[in-house]
Image 1 (spheres, rainbow, N blue to C red):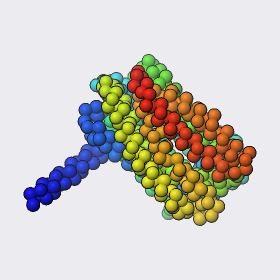
Image 2 (cartoon, helix red, strand yellow):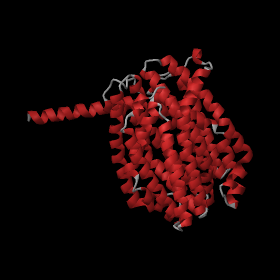
Image 3 (cartoon, helix red, strand yellow):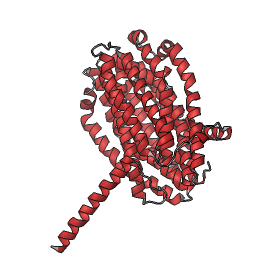
Image 4 (cartoon, rainbow, N blue to C red):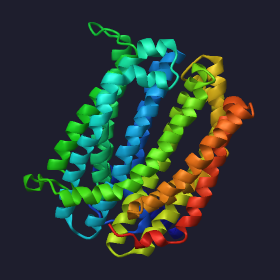
Length: 475
C-alpha cells in the first residue's frame, strides 16, 4: 500500500511539473538555456516554436482550402506566385539564420546590449531587402506569371494576387526577421504569439474577402492576398510593440536606435551562406514547378495542395529543429560545445520518430488528405501520389533538418549552402528533368527524383555533422 501511495504521489508531482513547464513555455520562460537540463531547455523552446509553426501551416492549409473553391487555376495562381515568394523567403530566412545565430551567441556571452543593437540592424536590413521584390510584383506581375508558364485564366485573373503578395512583402520579411531575433534570444513564446495573431486574422479574413460578406464585395483570389497582407501587417506592429516593451531576454531601447555599419556588414557576411542555401533550395523548387507546369494546371494544383499538407505535418519537426539553432548558438557562446552537440542528437531522434508516424499517415490516407481541399479527381491523384512517394524519405529527412540547423545555429551557414548546391542544383534538377521528360515518367518521375535527392542529402548532412568542425565557428 505504501509503495502504491508513493507511486501515485510521484505521478501527481510529475504531471504537476509537466503542466508548470508547459505554462512556462507558453507564457515565456526566463530560464538560462545554457544552464537548465537539456530536455527542459529543448522543451521550453520547442513547445512555442512547434505551436508557432503549426498555426502557420494551419493558415497555409485553410488558405488553400478556400482558394481551392475557386478552381484548379486559382490554386495554380497561388503555386506559381509562391515560386517567386520562395526567392523572397530564401533571402529573409537566410538572413534570419544569421540573425538567430548572432543574437543567440551574444545572449550566451551575456551581452544583451550588443544583442539589441544587432536586432535593430536586422530590421533595417529586412526593410531594404523587401524593396526589389515590391517593385517587381507591382509592375511586372503578368510577365512573371507568363515566365512560369501560367494559363490564360491565371494571366487574366491571377496577377492582382501577385501584386498584393509581392508588393506588400515587407510584412513578410519583417515577420521573419523580428521572430528570428526573439528565437535567438530565447523568447520563442513571443514569436509564437505574434504568428497566432497574424495567422488568426488571416484565417478570419480569408473567406470574407474571397467570397464577400454583407457590404464587403467578393475579391476572389485577390482577397486571399489582401487578407494575408493585412493579417501579417498587424502581426508586425505587434512584434515591434513587444520588442520595445516586453522581451524577457531581449529588449530594444531608444539608445539602440542607430545604424552600426560594422554590425550590418557582420550580419550580411554571416548571412551569405544562409541566403545561398535558401536560394539554392528555393530556386530548385522553381525549376521543379516549371517542369511540373509542362503537365498542366492540374499537376501544379496537385503539387501545391500536397506541399501545403506537407508544410502542415512537418511544422512540429521544424519547430524542434529551430530550437536546435538557438541552443547551439547560446551554448557555443557559453563555451559548452558538447552540450550544443547533445541538443542536436536528442532533437534528431525526436524528429525521426515523429516523421515516421507522419509517413505512415501519408501512406495510408494520402488521397483522403488531398480530397479535403478539392474534388477534382486528377488533382487528388497527383497530390496523393506525391505524398505517398515522399513518405519513403521522411525518416532520413528528419536528420537533415536537425543537422543543418546545427550548422546554422553555430554561424556556419556556408556548409549547408555547399550541400544544397550539390544535391538540389547539380543532382535534383537534372534528375527531375531526366525522369519527368526524357524518360517519359511524367510528374511521378519528378516526385521520385525529389525523394531520392532528399534521402541522399539527409544522410550526407548527418555524416558531415559528426565531423564536428561546426563547433569552431566564430561569429
